[in-house]
Amino acid sequence: MADEVLFEFLHMEMVSHVYKEQQSSKGELDNKDRAVCVSVLEGMGFRVGQGLIERLTRDSPSFKDELDVMKFICKDFWTKVFKRQIDNLRTNHQGTYVLQDNKFSQLTQLSNGKQYLDQAPKYLAFSCGVVRGALSNLGLDSVVTAEVSVMPSCKFQVVVQKL
Amino acid sequence: MADEVLFEFLHMEMVSHVYKEQQSSKGELDNKDRAVCVSVLEGMGFRVGQGLIERLTRDSPSFKDELDVMKFICKDFWTKVFKRQIDNLRTNHQGTYVLQDNKFSQLTQLSNGKQYLDQAPKYLAFSCGVVRGALSNLGLDSVVTAEVSVMPSCKFQVVVQKL
Image (cartoon, rainbow over all chains, first blue to last red; front, side):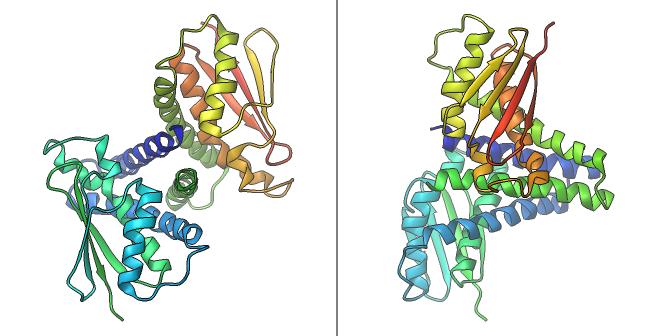
């Protein structure tokens, strides 16, 4: 129990620290400043995701193709990191994937419904980075964004970058 | 498993972020700058410790005295947060306590022995804050410091501030 909570509390502190430090150097935050904060958090998530996937795939066989990688992310990775499986995975078979989590662990403690919807991006940046970092170490460069319309449900869009 | 690792990785990122941001605004870090970093991390730990202790004592009876609080910290709190009990608790019965953990969880991944000893304070500041935050919510103002002579063993000194 304390484990999850320890992570959650530290994550909240980190979000507030990153925003506060930006605010103290800039005063009121405009959209550009907020983008800087999101990018800092996303970067941290990226490196954490790289570390996590290394541990989680240590005993896994290698993956057949891109879809196989995505399935691993939705099942094994999601269960270990976010405590449940992705509820729905959709793809256009051209490198775009939509992962829907109806009860995303980072949002369940935050709100239930449409209130505080504007606060969601702060608390999703790190997770987007985690997913991007994991995919990157599995050989997929991607852009990962999150969209929330009603908390705690969340849709992650992964666009794999073709070389 | 991923839980602990998730926390550990995030903690490492946070330490490196706090030091990097200080470095980018100051250039080379001197002792004063390092003290600022330690204090930022300690502050985060403080608020996390406050949150943790609220959850952990929800169903506990109240405490008899100071020593009773310290015993709770060494056993229940330490086990939940740092995965093991304190190996040795000493006190001068005048408000100073020394908590010895022979295998402190935040150091076991870092080093074994005397190498990298100079890096230890970075990775202990958050934990010192956690302990101080927990004690503070149990009604004890304190100063918590950590001392390492051989990793991963660590001594925490708690000095309770009398009003």
